Length: 84
Image 1 (cartoon, rainbow, N blue to C red):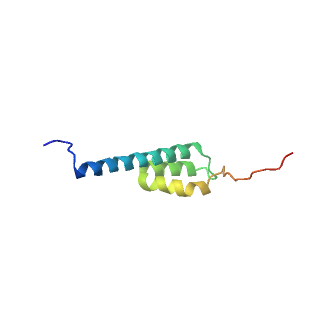
Image 2 (cartoon, rainbow, N blue to C red):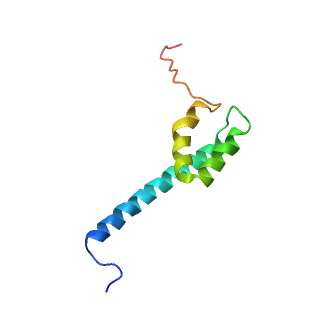
């Protein structure tokens, strides 16, 4: 009996591995973004980092969907096309 044999199980593990890599990328992005951002409230950074570290599945996607609205350095698109 081979440990890794070709068949229907191999495709499942390959897809699972790709999803894990994708999730790990989201997790790392959320963690580094939370650590490098400034928030309006002083304790918000600590709470987001704890949420990302201790509840990684929920904390990562909550941060990615909600944290942009509570950050201090909110970027506005304000182009100036007039020549001076």
